[in-house]
Image (cartoon, rainbow, N blue to C red; front, side):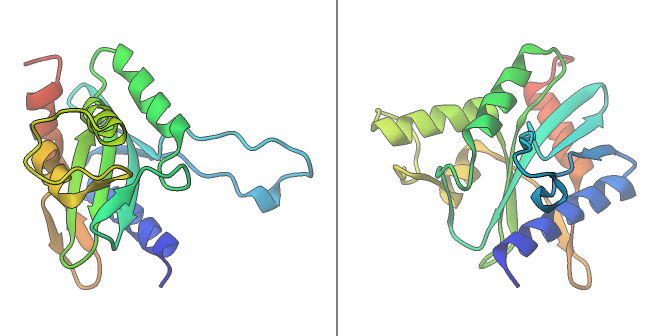
Length: 181
């Protein structure tokens, strides 16, 4: 199965997990370029989804890999995704970030707040002094850094796919970043 399909399976598992837990989930649909007319500009999505929970909005971008790190390459993490997640910080009650899914050797998923992501990316790309315990990669964010700066999303494997405890993640994020502390 291709990595792209694995990413879609991950996204669908998050959506189903939200649905089962009674959490509002809106998936921003990608535009199929084949359905468009010639020379028609394709709008870029700001994020993969919006989740609403306990008076907080969570704009999220999903990335799934079988590798031990996620590349900063424009083909993986687009600059407009970073820009739009960061711009959503100006609104009260909004907690934006990435959900990084590392499929192998065991399924681990972490929420990385956009501020923490941008700080790490700046340190990594510019060789700045830092206090990270794990190895800093110049062109990617490794699982060790995600463990250090992120919030793990607990999960359980059903027959073939995973279910994620999104409610526990969101409660933890609200405690950590929310406006109603």
